[in-house]
Length: 141
Image 1 (spheres, rainbow, N blue to C red):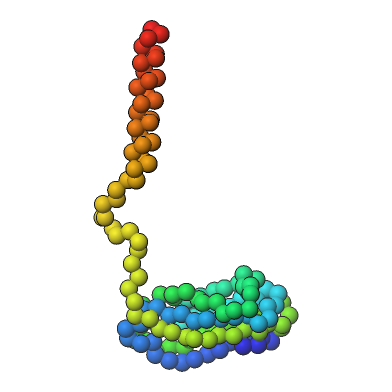
Image 2 (cartoon, one colour; image 1 turned 135 degrees about the vertical axis):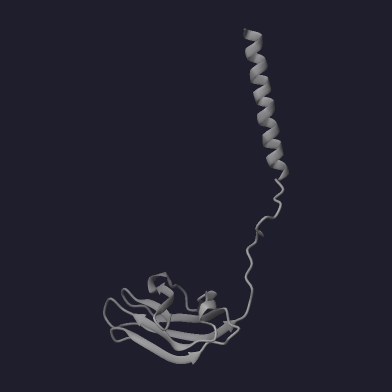
């Protein structure tokens, strides 16, 4: 996409029934002043990226965008290259992908967490310090 003020790419399609995530690659070949990239499904903003955050010459990935609530729906996917300054931007979008994956947190709810040995050592040192302090005060009294 090359912008002249703002530029948009519209695509009408149906999101696969079993898709719960979407990702794409993008790269700014030329970054203008105040540029930002957006991705919408119908009127729902799914992705926003400020062009000034982009560096290098390689494609970046959007990451996994949660589209679970749109699975099986037909609508308009819109990529927008929005510009606040002069029309001087160029953006490439590539490798659209839908995923049917389950993303789990690293800690399961209700899992038993075992403290590290260093936590026990610090706790023990604290108790010893308290005992020494109490016994010192008793001797002075």
